[in-house]
Image 1 (cartoon, rainbow, N blue to C red):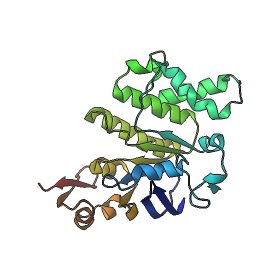
Image 2: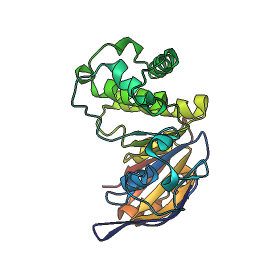
Image 3: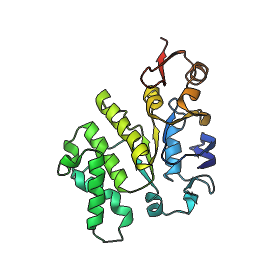
Image 4: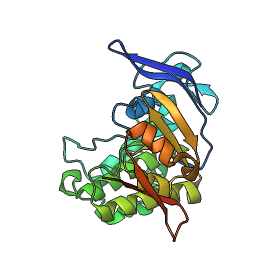
Length: 254
């Protein structure tokens, strides 16, 4: 839950009075124009940017009262930049998700390896476990980072623009995977995404940010209207219905 969250960076008001609640096992997409505060909101939830007390809660825990290790057992993060400097193996990367559960100098247990293996099975990368991370394609690499997040065994996964650098095939596969995590594993997925059509088709709820404020929040068909799109993007859109999903599809009017 986010309660009256404000964020000022370098003297600029990035987020203003943000109030949101997230339901377990649902898929949320945070959408909005560039500069609307989407990534900043994720970083506030993760305490990567300092937040005030009683503004961000995870499982009723004020994040300001949690250590980094405690927070890492509640929420995992897939950043926009998934580049890794050293060419670790896929297995090594996924096993990093178990670090919050290890004491200093403690080695991974059989259970840790079993959890990592299951995460690789779910993300369909088990056959890549011995490959170097820097030998993989963009889509494969993204699945590795998501497997690492799954290995953290959290009920919440935050992702920052996970499909922005992928081709359409990998984009669809990744969005399907995230949707399956909510439906089959009851994980809450919260992702920043620019492509409104993907957000509409796969999300249970949209959080529409504009100028650092929550412009609208709700079911995709409620949030995505010609009037809302015009106000936020200052341009006209044509809205159709997807005959397969009965959800809206938007087309900008050029």
